[in-house]
Length: 396
Ligand code: GLA
Image (cartoon, rainbow, N blue to C red; front, top):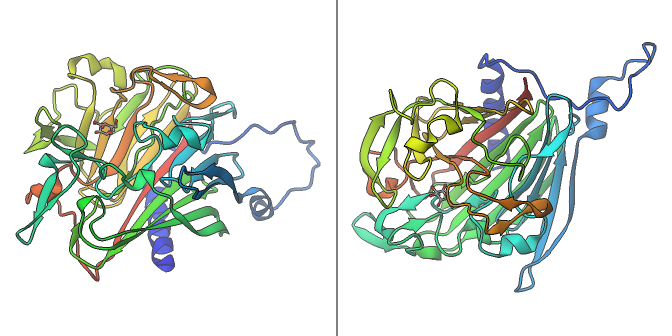
C-alpha cells in the first residue's frame, strides 16, 4: 500500500511539473535582507531543517476517543493542519504575493465545531461523495438501501459518513521532499448500508514545491461502490474575509451533468458553451452566478476523462494567490457555498455568509451507481482503489 501511494504521488507531481502551466512558486518574504556576503546555504539542508510533520491533541469525542491534530509545514511557510476526526483539513495557510500567510479554508478552531452539524468543512467524504438518487442502488440484482439524509436522496456517505469517524494514524513524518500524514479507516460491511468491509487510507502530502496532495486508497472484501473526495471550502483572500465572487476561475470541462430538482443527474451531459456554466476560459465566479438558480452546485465532466490533469485553476486578484487542482478523477463538483447563511461561526469568530467559500470536489459523477453510462464506481474484491488530487499554490 505504502509503495503505491508513493508511486501515484510521484507520477502526479511529475505530470504537474511537465504540464507547462505558468507558475511562480509562492515564497514567504525573508524577515530581513541578507548581507551579500552570507555564505550560501545548501537548499537541501534548509529544506530538511524547516519541513516538519507534528502531532498534538485536538481533544476527545463525546464517547472518549482521542483525536489528534497534525501539522505539516514546508520551507515556503505553507502550513496544513489535519485532524484524525473525519481526516479533516482544518486549516491551510498559504502566502500571498507579498509573502503574508492567510488561512484559506473555512472551518473551526476547535474539535467541538466539527463534532456539531456543519456542511462538511474540509472533510474527507465517503463512502460516496455527493448524491445517490432515492438513497438506493443495485449490485448484481441485490438492492442496497442507504440513509435518505438529503430529502429522499443519500448525500455524502449518510448519517455518519467518513467525515464523522476517527481515523487511525498510520504514518507521520518528513519523507524526501514531502511532509506526510497517512490516516486509515476500516468501514465495516453494512456501515451506512454499503456492502463490504472496506479498508481505506487517506494520505496528505505537503511538498517543497507548494503542492498539497491528497491520495486515497481502498480495498474491499465484497463488491461495493466508492467515491471519495475532500470537501474543503476555499477563500483565497483568507477565510471569513468576505465572499468568493471576485475569484477568477477556470474549469477544464466543456460539459456538466444536468440535474433534476433534487440535484440528481438526469443522465444528460450538456455543453457549457454560451451559458453561465462555461469556465473554460477564466471568469469571475460572480459574473454570471445570478443567472444560475441557487448558485453553482454542479458536477463538471472534466476533459481529461479520468487521467491526471489540470481540473481547475482559481485566482484571487487582491492577494495574488493562485490554486490549481490536478486530479485523476473524471469530475469536479463546483459548489459556491450556497447553503451558508450566517448561522455558522467559524475560525477566529468569522461568521460564514452565503458564498463565503467555494468547493471544487474532485469526484466521480453523482448517482453513478444508478447510471450505467457514467464511469464506473464499482470496486471489486482484489482490486485497489487509488486516486490522487493535488492542490498547487503559487502567486501572480
Ligand atoms: C456538496 C453538495 C451541495 C451541498 C454541500 C454541503 O457540495 O453538492 O449540494 O450539499 O455539499 O452543504
